[in-house]
Each structure stands twice: as structure tokens, then as C-alpha cells.
Amino acid sequence: MEAVNDYLQRQYREIIQREPTPQKLGEFKFECKWLLRSALKLDSLVKDPEYPARHFGPEIAGKLLQLQESWDSLNNPTTDTEADTILQKVFPNEPRAGGPA
Image (cartoon, rainbow, N blue to C red; front, side):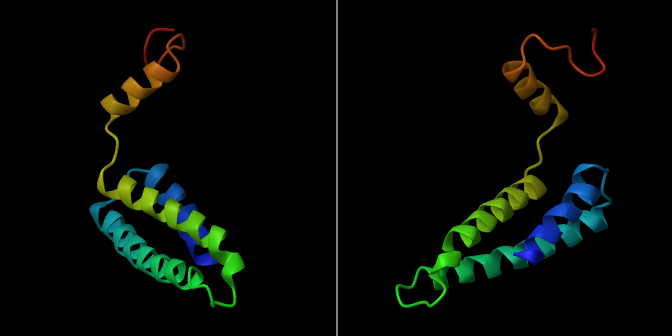
């Protein structure tokens, strides 16, 4: 859990808040891929009816969803135009950043 939390915090700082280099983006894709694989294995383990720590199932499932969203955002990022369209639909009466107030 701590490894996923650390990864997501670094992704926010280094990928979302900044314009990443292609090398940095590749590093995050590689790390995300391995974290996803690990989470999938853990998820399958805790679903075993005889697994002794089944109570971790919901937390592992939640981290798995976060990693899947991370993977999608790294491999299929939203364009500025798509983001503006979504924001306009959700907040139709709000001025857009950089646009007329």
C-alpha cells in the first residue's frame, strides 16, 4: 500500500503538475506496469477463501483501481481541448482559464 501511495504522490508532483520529459514518462509507465502486476496478484490471493488476510481485499481493490486509472492517464492522456469540453459541460457558467471573464 505504501509503495502505491508513494508512486501516486510522485506521479502527481512529477507528471501531473509538470510537463514530464519522455524519459520520465517512460519511467513512470514502467513502474506503474509492475505495481499493477503486483496488485493484480495480491488481489487474486485475497480472493482465495482460505487466504488468512482476506480483510485486506477492499484496500487492495481500491489501490488496483487507482493504478489502473494511473495507467490510463499515462497511456491515454486527456488533451487540453478534451479537458476544456469536460469543464464546460460540468461548469457551464464559469469562465475558462485564459478566456474572457
